[in-house]
Length: 183
Image 1 (cartoon, helix red, strand yellow):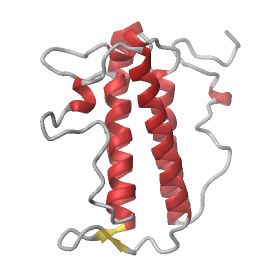
Image 2 (image 1 turned 90 degrees about the horizontal axis):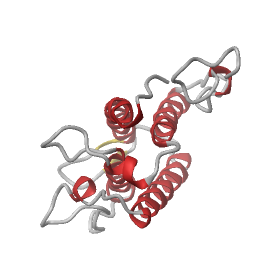
Image 3 (image 1 turned 90 degrees about the vertical axis):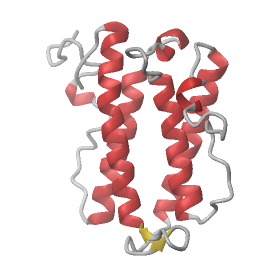
Image 4 (image 1 turned 30 degrees about the vertical axis):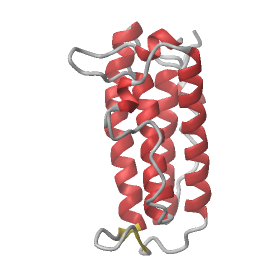
């Protein structure tokens, strides 16, 4: 452990990948940095865990696990970007089904293939969302289906809220798995 590293933290505070060393300017840049901060936080919370640890459930009867959160947030990114912003509501959400609306969590089992699929989906949806967001000039643009339209900024703020809430869950789940807290 280096002198700056705090026990229980993943990296030295000066090496935290979420600290870009710059201050974003403008609404779009600020929202993007907050969203990316929480995306990276999710990855930090899952770092170094095997399939069994990622799939460990919280407290019965909850089906929540870190792996379930990765699957859930891949589905969230897909929904709000591909379906809502891009208007492709006909696309089925990954890790969701009519028979099991909690498939993202219920299907999060301790299997290396399931873990790989979840991370692949999440990384693909985050990359796609970043591309779409980069091409949006006006955050006041209305998106979504008729009768449920909102501004892009509201969608991005919703994503930030979703990640912030679930990163809080990830804190507790990680602590249950191996005692790590913080950061």
